[in-house]
Length: 129
Image (tube, rainbow, N blue to C red):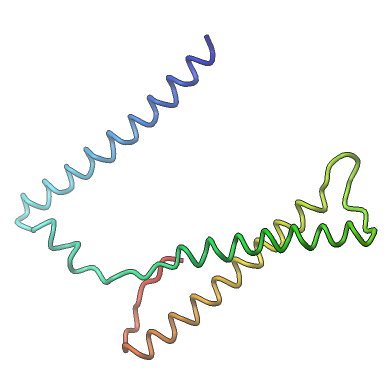
């Protein structure tokens, strides 16, 4: 009985969020139309966003795998990676290298943003970090 209730709550929540998103968007567009503003014109005026989603995911996966390799190497040379029964050292190395890779991603994107600003003369290029 509780499993059915949990599933019903999950699907009800998803439906509610989706319904609210669409009705809110519709109301916003109708308000713009009433004011005499073209709602499609607002999207066209926005500056293009440059996203580096694949670079972010790639850096993060490389960081996770390097964390696994470092922890395996430390375990191989005899460093105790376990706290009781839990392999805490493995998780620590994975998270440490994953975080370091996201910091490297941020630095790469910041460098690319500065280069793009120099080339295009755009001071407010919006990047999705």
